[in-house]
Image (cartoon, rainbow, N blue to C red; front, side, top):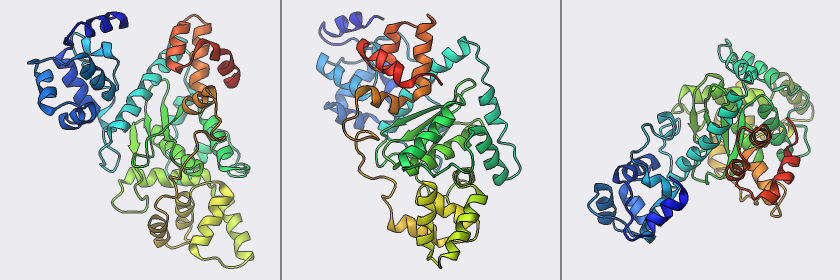
Length: 395
């Protein structure tokens, strides 16, 4: 239904939305009726009456409900609800069983919206996803060391590089770009301090990783490689900040954390750094963890895992980090990596990534989608298109 028609119907008195669609959207949102009613400033009794079809909302109430459910208003005039949920069941809770918030689930739905378009574009162009197939071939490796080596080969980042960039932002951006160049979407979203660290969504053509923007760039690098490890086995996953060392953490989460740590901190490089450190004098466990984290531009947790695996620090050091640095990976961040003056185009590039933007713009140039589609998906005005096209260039 055209948006103008939806608005016309909604403006003509009580809004005749579909009760079944409203019920589906509520179930898909991750909220219960009481929470939605509170958010939309209506009574639970009124909301239940709309779901049962015994009553209808007025225009203001309808707009509030649509806003809180993060759905376009025309969605609620569909004759039938969608047949399937908007995202896989395995993404409805974090890997450790932690329920996701409504904000988290909205972020997943929006990410899948972008992924579905990019996947269609790539499939439509019949571009062989050779790098994606190569990613899946990494999973059967017999050891975590062998897996991390194959991941580094796939990424094309030399062992000598890794954390030698001038800043954690530079290191993260280069790691992100290496993954994007292999045909994997990498987006950043503000999932909140109480949300999960990131999620990955498998796809035959274009897998996706979404990172929590609230993390430090060093922690984002760790989450990035953790989710990449999940994609190698072909599954979707949402990951909370579960201690990788804790026995309560699922085995796949502990394994993904160890692989991520070894990708970011190659074993030979780590051994050389440890030898250099010993020559300059003994360090306490936390001092050594901090030094390795600075050297490789990774989080304290990634550093601790690498050193624990080598027997260089005691396992209790990880718990000490969790106890003494609970907010280390969630500082107060500025609006953009380059400070508060980030432009709208720069923000879109940071959020969506160069791969997504380049693929969408290229599809419009080839006549596969319209300029209106580009503007809608990138949430930009027409005057910004030349600037963002220049910003992403070619991949």
